[in-house]
Picture 1 (cartoon, rainbow over the protein chains, first blue to last red):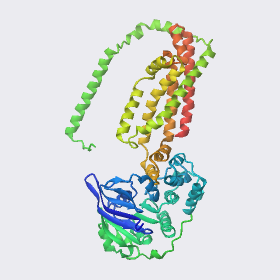
Picture 2: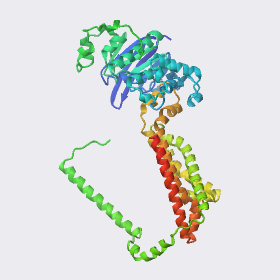
Picture 3: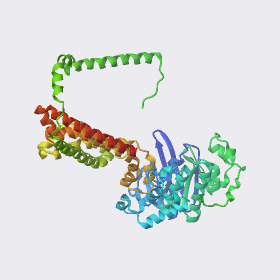
Picture 4: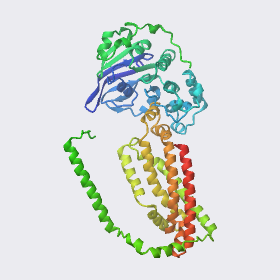
Length: 274
Length: 263
């Protein structure tokens, strides 16, 4: 398995509007990649295609050496394949009326016999794994509570625990911090970075905020109008480039607070405890 | 999709014309139906004396057979209970199969048409048919209520499913779950409170319906009610009606309390 994700000439249109143009991308195992770009640049669309949650019009996608889709056809085994691909959503997408622990346990569905999963007969080992995942994101004490009673930041950490319980090799996070306050956003990004560093999982995260991309990811892929505009180390970012990427409609000084190169990179990455 | 148009004087005038024609049509249909329904309010005044005599026969109510009435009323509730429970069991999968956000059109269209058919025929008609099929007695009533309630609940259940938030379903899908598991963990938790409320409501109305299916021989208090009316035993009829009113109201209140717990 040489690459974790390989996208080849992916095209996608919504009606008459083309969202992705001949997109090609590969991500190596263990990388942490930021997908950046303005709204409507196609970054979320690309991410949804990687997990087989959307079908392209042409082109192919391979994850962990197995084809997810090709020329608009999903692999027949895509449901099992998704077990290896953890997905974090902007709106968390937890089942609000189930408990936090039940939500995390759902992560195991892709790896257990269908009948057992459908009857929610999780074995002690799976329950243990779910509890450990909750502990790792610092939310073990909320295990019995309904997911809907948690704050946005906490719900997103539960969603990450679900991906951990899933034992996914690749984690795709679609605007995971766009709906969160700065403190929750920092915690979520640090957990994702920790999963990448300590567990060696491949992480692809779409971000609005370029400073987070620079702080947490070594590599960034910038999309503009459905095409890859830049692909390289985040160290190469400068205000001119960002102005061009975002079409000058953002105050770039807000994105790069300390001149061109934020010093925050050196900050020790500690796991959220609260 | 329709586009929003701003009201110009021309469209305004056109709209008021259309409104006028609409009202005209409505009153024309009302007048036409007056004839068809042989509406005759004067009869109420002319035959007032007859009606007073008739009403007097109802009082005082004759409760001499009250134990028998109560026993048949219990049977009536039992018919409603089984008719509703069987319908709920069938309406869960059928409701899912009627939801356009869960299954493709070539599934939900035919299933919806079958449910429409179950709903469009009144339970009295089904009761008459089942009396022929399985014989006189409560079981025919259970089957009649079961068929028509399945049609109603499947539609209501599907409407609840079509209003869910798709996010959690996608969240479950992303873990590698099967299609059935998406429904079990992503859809059902979201619709459960509404489903329970609809089911209790249907149970209430099925108790009311079960009081009349007996009139065609399908068991319950309707059987003796029909006998009393046909035998001109109006004092007994009155007692039966009072029993029905009391029990149906009690069940309505009880089920309303229960429903409030789930919403």
